[in-house]
Image 1 (spheres, rainbow, N blue to C red):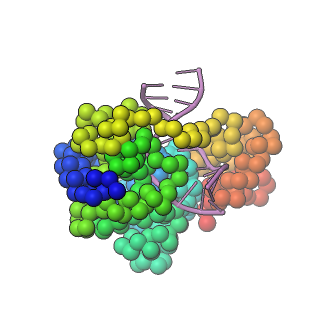
Image 2: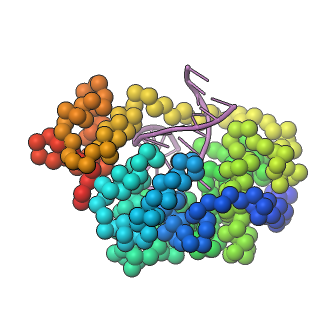
Length: 297
DNA sequence: TATTCGTGGCC
DNA sequence: TGGCCAAGAAT
């Protein structure tokens, strides 16, 4: 057991103080955002940078200020409003979550972690984040930022494992402040530290409140030795083709004929496979006569 | 557990 | 220029 694990408070106080001084003023952190605003932001921020989320988030909340407002819409409208945030299945899942909340939770975002986890598109991280950020509960909020901060400051390695491990969950739980409000503050603060200071590349240790005790820094910042993360190729993949097809469908107000979709990609086999995949995912609805549109159901 | 799933900006 | 990265979830 390291010194930090024996005295977690030595970790909390500096990070929370730093957060008090340096936290970004993000719309989903304001009181008026509410739990729905927090949930919308968490869906949008899954693998997408803050700068790109901001404008879409504002439009989304203005158009659908409550879960019931989104639930009353066609799922295709959610996909259209999602724009170019990427991973459009998240839009579909957020819409499905809104309908589930309208049906099962009286149109409210549930406070209970297990009920959150049962919603479409809500996994371990998002359930903990909503419960913590929106409702001030005590949960280990283990996202890529927090994992990196703990890997460095506590474990003493440059990067966390590729997939979240039981050891990481155990560590995060062990480091959780006892007090509920402090735990929620710690969750937001440690995440922000990873996002702004303890970044994946070009970390700025001179600005870090943990620099003096950081296990990785004290060890001389040894380079990551494990297997490199698998690069995510994109050019020429089905994902690129799906993206192009969906872009055409988002722009269109009327059903799109097959021959127009054919302009999205030159290779017919891959093009057909990508379109089939979009239909199978519920992102595209096939109509009579070889026409397609965003889903109305 | 390893893959799949978008998009764009940065160094 | 291009690999890397960005508040993950589902299968």
